[in-house]
Amino acid sequence: MLVEPLSPPEAKRLIREILESGSVSFSNHALEELAKDDLSTVDATNMLRGGVVDPGEFENGSWRYRVRTTRMAVIVAFRSETDLRIVTAWRFTS
Image 1 (tube, rainbow, N blue to C red):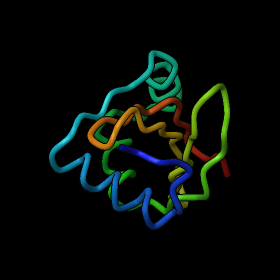
Image 2 (image 1 turned 30 degrees about the vertical axis):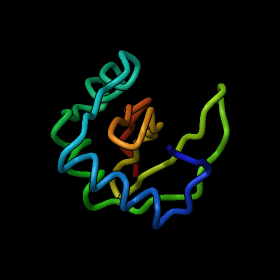
Image 3 (image 1 turned 135 degrees about the horizontal axis):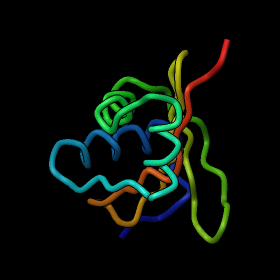
């Protein structure tokens, strides 16, 4: 059973496990935001692999974790130990 909040290293480990053998889904909002910033679901998935995980924040009834690189960020919520949802995403402007 998933007990949150996870520390950033725990969240990163779980993200990697889910990418390898679990399920990643995208909210409609995330898909709209990716398209608006000319980003793809592949960009977001790759960013999960290489990004830095910030401490979780409790919002709208669930724990959410920002995963970021120098160029973009996504917010993820774990639905279970094998399922995560990308809630939103954006590209940083310079």
